[in-house]
Amino acid sequence: MEKADLTRIAAEAGLTRLSDQHLEQLQRSLAAARELADKLPKDLHWSEELSLTFRLARPTGHKP
View 1 (cartoon, rainbow, N blue to C red):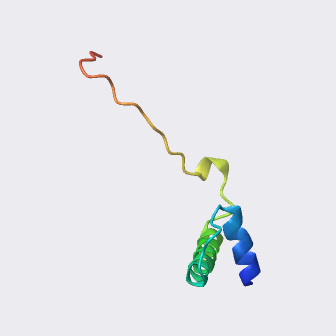
View 2: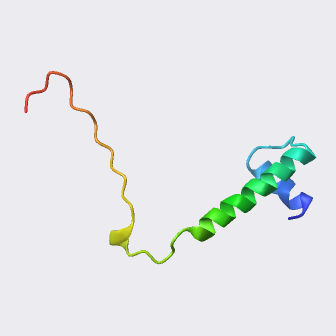
């Protein structure tokens, strides 16, 4: 990826004063994220996808 592209991506994220070393780290992190995203299954049926649920704890002293 070109340095100008990395600088533009960083600026869009609000990172306007990155050194060359930081831009290299950004490039590696973008490549790693792309690689991980490519490994995710793309053909799951809606019923096979994970669904995280959040339940609030019952108030203390609550009787069923």
